[in-house]
Amino acid sequence: MHVTRQAVLTASNNELYRYLNLKLAALGEPISHATADPEFLDLARPLLRNYHRKDQLLGNLLCPADLRIQEFLEAYLLDTNPNERVHRLPADAFTLDRPGLARAMSLPPSAESIESPYLKSYRLPQGVLHNPRSDRRTTQGIFHIVEGGFPVPADKIGVPKVTFKRLLAAALQPPKDVLALPFTADQPEHAHFFVSLLLRPLVCPSGGNHPSKSMETRFFAPASLVSNLDFVESIFGNAGDPYLPENDAALDVEHWSGHTGCVILAPHIAGMNKKDLGLPHYDQATPLQRRDGMCWKNADEIYNNGSAFKVTCRDARGVVVTLIADNYYGYCKKEVKTQISYAANLFGLCEEEHAGGAIAFPAYVIGQEFYAGRTVLTKPVQYEAAMKLLGDRVELKPERYAVDREYPNVYYVPENADFLVLEGVVRWPEHKLVLRPEDVYVLPWGTKIRLEKQPGGTAWRLIASRADGVLCHKPCTVSGGGKSEISKSLGSIILKGTVFVRDYKNDFDV
Image (cartoon, rainbow, N blue to C red; front, side):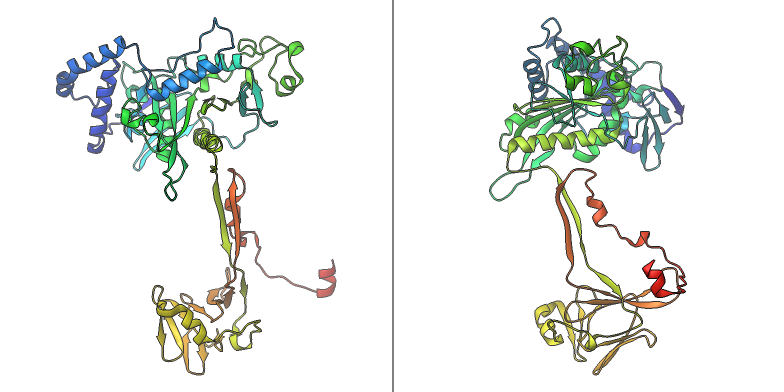
């Protein structure tokens, strides 16, 4: 790692730094000398050594959630080569049991920036900026699914169990430099380990007498990629220490959906050899494996051409394990959402996807003069009838108009009001109001009139918005399904300017 130094120690970080050093010492790892409190550590050292020794004697026991994941993996991969053991999840990982730890660990305390093969991180006045090596906007060739569970969709790539088993082993044995903790990168002694995070993302919200249901998701990342866990934590929250009984989902059956997820970040597995991963030779491969490139002709062929991918293992038991061969932050977020969808489908009567859209009210430019009394209406509405519907939400004026109590710039005017831009008034027989651009004038049938300057010009004109809008709504779509496009204005695609029409009929025929 390359570190740019600058002393950046603030009082707000002191408590996190002290806690970080305590946890590092408890793991038997080097502490950060720049932030250490020697007297405090000397006082706690016997207790920390005792804790570390007991942890070693217990054989690095897995927390309940990790034990569920490990048992699933061993059962799922039981029919593969028995001489190759299923690699064990890291029980000695640094647990992010407190919000903010991941962010504090992502930079050396005495540095303004750090650079590694996978990302560059910078300290800013408002926090930390991370620039990952990958910033992808494509999913082509990304999604790989292990065979033997649910059917593999036609647009996804099926992966043999033995290949997943070897990818898992490689994912949990990263190079030492990938395990290096940025927090200790500014000193000769570096800490090396996995970092883990527990999430409890919501699967089904509460309703009536039914309590909310959430799944449990475990994240593992080599310490150099702790910023990915900071990103995920900022979205889905931190569910605390997975070793504590109060955080064990299985002991909270009322609020647990019964599903467990696991995500392991492993960008170092991109570039592994197809043959070494147990993929068949082209001559022994099925037509589907040939189509997807899950076979080899030359012994030195690289899995997925060395590109990023994520491979998922899941079945009806309710456990899903995903390896992500990249450190792009978007994949981490989307994988959690994918696992929520998986849990929602198995749980039943709920679905994980987000709605989106807009209520669109047609609006028209109506020029510089508008006479409401001359408007052709299918069902004319009188001012008095409209005010009766609004009741005490408006303040009635004796001059036959009303002011909204919550929005004092909204005026309700009678059905025979005239809007005159050049005179700057809204008038009717009983009264007149000054026509101002910051005010909105509502007619009895709901049409809203406002004064607006023509964009790019100097002329003022009246804009009328109808009350009967259109609900453009997508109840459930995937990311990229076009929800945000519905609510965007078309104004930016309209070109404005002077147009000369020589022959109107001929030009429009053309």
